[in-house]
Amino acid sequence: MVVHKRRKVQRQRGSRTHGWGRLHRGSGNKGGAGNAGSGKKADAKKPSFRFRVFGKHGFIPHNHQAFEHTINLKDVEMHMSQWIAGKHATGTNTTATIDLTKLGYTKLLSEGRVTSKLTITIASASKRAVEKVKAAGGTVTVGA
Image 1: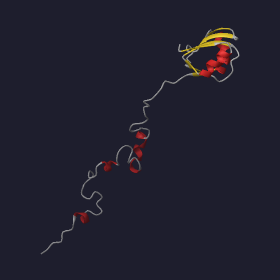
Image 2: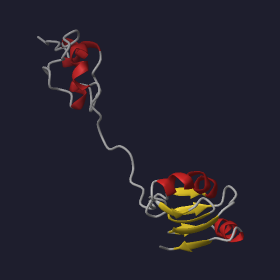
Image 3: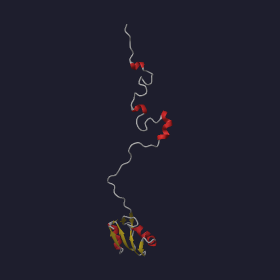
Image 4: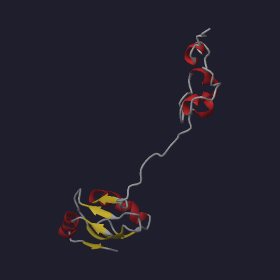
């Protein structure tokens, strides 16, 4: 007598795991990697890792240059009386000597007019800023 043996696929229909228990699938069994599978049945777990960030983030700029703290001539003119009062500069409002590097500035820019005779010391300055200060009768010492 010949016995017709059903294939395993047919016998396992409707059995959820198809004979493999719970551990048949690899990472798919737990939903994948990272935050995958965090929905539906795992709703109770969501708050515990909702704000956790996985993987690498951001970048490192290898051509990073130091940030320059710039100041314009109009700002130098505007703050001169305050700097003289605070003893950061010497002289009067018409003729003054100031070291901008001590105030944390690294570059002098040319925006604005120069109405007073200034003696300025700074690490770097634009050509036009130096020309404007010299035209007003002052000097700029660069590279201090």
